[in-house]
Amino acid sequence: MVENILDQIDVNKLPNHIAIIMDGNGRWAKKRSLPRVVGHEYGVKSVRLVAETAAKLGVKHLTLYTFSKENWNRPQLEVKAIMTLLVRTIRNEVKTLQKNNIRLKTIGDIDSLPADALRELKEAMELTKNNSRMDLILALNYSARWDIIQATKKIATDVLNKTIDVNEIDEAMISKNLSTSCLPEPELLIRTSGEYRISNFMLWELAYGEFYFTDVFWPEFDQNAFYKAVLDYQKRERRFGKTSEQVK
Ligand code: IPE
Ligand code: IPE
Ligand code: MG
Picture 1 (cartoon, rainbow, N blue to C red):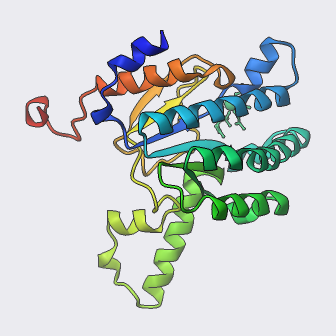
Picture 2 (cartoon, rainbow, N blue to C red):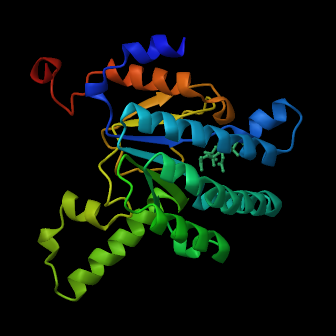
């Protein structure tokens, strides 16, 4: 089954950047009468599998929405468990990242993360900084509106300091000031768990992104599910406002 879907994928038409809203850990656990945190633990297995699968396929950038600004509003015990899991996972997975030649990056307000999480992240980013097969970007303490606000503040400061003129502000300048400036815009956004919303993720960058939704809960999202999303993307016609005839 996996081979069949993989055979249909055109490796010359891969999205350069795939972003994933990893959703459904809690419901996956609830369905099994397990605590929500067990769902997050199983979600880590999917992260490992999908990162490896994407790298092998030839995807260059994979962004995973890992923790949103809004997720701080969850019960404190769950937030604490997620942060502990984050620290443990980064520590354990560095070897796998090295083996797979994957570079770890982050987007979001990481300086406001708990100190131990920040330390592990910085260490892992430093250790993997010369890896070149794929960038794995964790969106941590991220929200798109936060990012747009911090970019706006930087640009406004430049105007006040007369480093730039108001009329110089354009799309490129805004993109350059977002925490995603090191990344191309995602061509494909995947959201698992049957929710059809964007939940404050890459509002600017996804202006022309292709969306793919699946009912599969994140802990069950496997190679096959990933290939299906890529295949679906390859069947789309991206028009960017033009007519079908113009882009043929
Ligand atoms: C996604 O799974 C993980 C995070 C948002 C941290 P959820 O925890 O949102 O799972 P559901 O949506 O409650 O099932
Ligand atoms: C989005 O999932 C955030 C992450 C996957 C990190 P949520 O589960 O937090 O989103 P909502 O609240 O259902 O929109
Ligand atoms: Mg959710």
